[in-house]
Image (cartoon, rainbow, N blue to C red):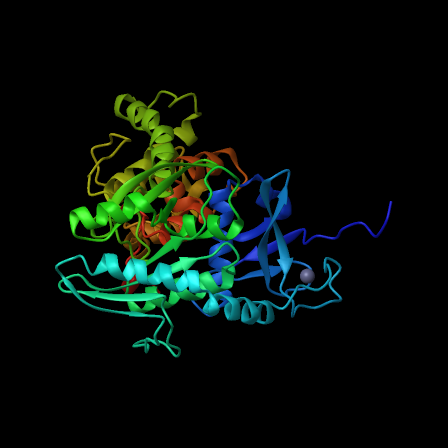
Length: 434
Ligand SMILES: [Zn+2]
């Protein structure tokens, strides 16, 4: 029994998401905590991202990945410049700048690295659109303070410029983040080619981070890729696709046939967004079916009367945000009239069935394409509701957060926004906000 008990950061507050405890983090899938990790690093580098602060001392924290039994596990860790008096502070971190400098020294001297760059340069020249390339030359910025030295920078006619970077197993997450964000700002596609990928053994965290940024795709330039490039007269890569903890493949993919999202980090198969949206659809489908057959005075999927009306109203809002004028309450009213009458506490008899959910409905509307209803009488009714409000821990709120997470689950909403994959019904036109 040596040493003090290990102190960990028990909870952090993440901008726009809220409090995330150490155990919340451990319960997340690797993709989920991994994206938070990426985005916190992005913000630390001054790019758009998420800032996370220790709940005890308010210093910035990041998500560290520590291996336990070969499995990467996430924990919050203070940055090295944080307050050492924090009760959750745990020792000094090594200074990444120093380590990076010595690593880069080694990297620039690496003859093998240079040869790999030249190999890729040969392949990009096979394409008839080829105009020019540079290897490790300074590229001046158009939209930011600092330029970069991309490993390879290529220009193809009609396609435009793109950059290729090699990811070595020891490359720092901060360096990966800085490069990703730089090219995103510049609007230049960036592809990370993994160097020394061994799919048979467990992947180093730096590889996992880059693979996730490419939405679960690991790109390598191996012998089959080089042969295929020569045959097809364009740049072809081998792509492994992540399936849970494993990588499948590889498959040969043409660079110009990849998908290029807003992040400018291309992918072949989207392993992040597709499975998430599919899971949500599976949860939601039985509710749409039940609503179609629902008769207004019967329980909906076993819910009580008030909750049934709430779900019908919420799904009607979502249908309208999707461009379908559906009133699941079947009251032959338009959406505004239906919401107004269900919220009207002054009505005779038992008025305002859903006024106890005014906070919830306001929250839902605010995160959908129907948010302008908040500027109408509907918004006034919601704000004036005097009924005692069901809060976020109520069963009704939890149910709708599960069924409509694009609008009501801040973590998922933020992820989909980050991945440029929030469905249009849950998008708020930024110009009309505030
Ligand atoms: Zn702290």
